[in-house]
Image (cartoon, rainbow, N blue to C red):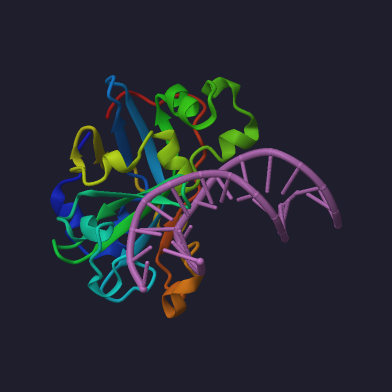
Length: 209
DNA sequence: CTTCAGATGCTCT
DNA sequence: GAGCATCTGAAGA
């Protein structure tokens, strides 16, 4: 399946965020196992004008340095002392922009993802756990074993890459305010969150990624 | 279903 | 020292 090229990310961040819906995020573990999820929820962050962005007005600190990197790089940071958030860098190098990956559903190696996330096999999950498998940025990183060690990776090759997937139909896509940025004044109301409803499959899909 | 408190450590002032 | 792009379990309705 086609890996999204660098050029995919070198566009308006909101466009990238919307088009990432349905795409397949692949995480290759050190042991070689390939975990794959379908992206269902994203948010855009645009530093030059967005008070919710870590690099608002091009603010450069050790943490935000990755946001200034080339499009198609991972940006992963620690939040609330115990969770991680995964972003993809967008727009040309020097523009501190990215897309936060807020949610996904597992499509491959569900047992390993379930082990990372809940400490048990996928078949042992409750209906509630299955419904909330990876529906949050911290949950996604936990399930895919992503930490700051994976910050700054090239998203066009292993161990972390993204493939074109089946996009939701336009009428399935929901748009709204971003989550958890109430402090950001006018930017708190920017409709830069995109998502669609996707059922968690009962079984792994075919090994195409 | 809902609200709510607590966890926990890094980042920047 | 304050705040944070979050999550969980417990308790209530």
